[in-house]
Image (cartoon, rainbow, N blue to C red):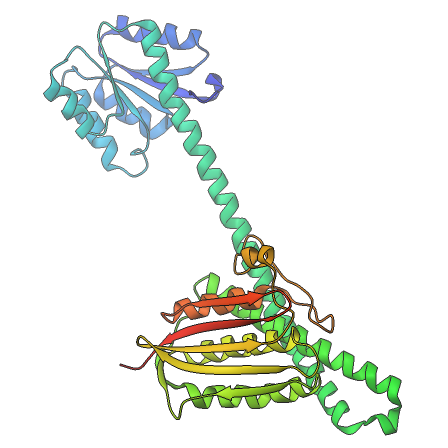
Length: 375
């Protein structure tokens, strides 16, 4: 299917040393509403191309001094003119001549004497390709600007908000510690606790957003080092035990004496923190959570198992896909962004592992990720 074009928006350079041929082509193309410019030699054609930048060149092959193949060769060497399509007009029909024409950068061949309808169709086809390429370039530039703007926005939101929210988080943590309910009353203490938890969630979201943006625009590199998986998990579990205690949830660890993996420790910690945070969020009060570490096929496999609300089959299909952006509320209506798990999968894969899960509605979920073991 030929793309619909507006001929008057395109200029075609006609190059032929025979004046009658030039006039004939000019009349045919003008009747089709194309703009035309003409040259009667190879050297004049090069001058006009560099000055006028036509959209298409109809180039006679057999010309004195500088033939069409030589003109094409010269134009294709220059990046400024290399993309201009060339249709050779020639009485040469030998296969070797056609091959040489294409080798010199020609886009098509029209044999003399040419058929008017064939000429117009071939010219229109080449102009359609020019039009399509311009649309693609324009859309690509627009898309790049949009992506750059989006990444800048994400980075500004995450980076510039992270510091003030972090400060608020510290203040609220201090208030919680120094203002027990006996001093400020039960209702005020509950409001303060809720504000503290909300701030913690916002800070975690901003941290994930900043890391996700850096990862997507290639500014986050994997720094490989030997990782004591057991030590890392014990540290994270210790921090989250306090969060879990607020919902009367117990975190149990099933860890080997030692397991050394090879990867980025910050990324591994981020994955563990997100998986534990989710497990707490989707578990009911008084439930248990298990953090299990095993060595399987040269990989350290870390699993977080909960007895929470689980995910139905429809939700499982949407999880871990950027286009569906699936998220749900926790058992205490804790709000999630759906970004954490995407970040976890991205980080696991960047370290040479992967992330997966098994879940059943009403029975709980087990999320696991792998990191290569030290060799």
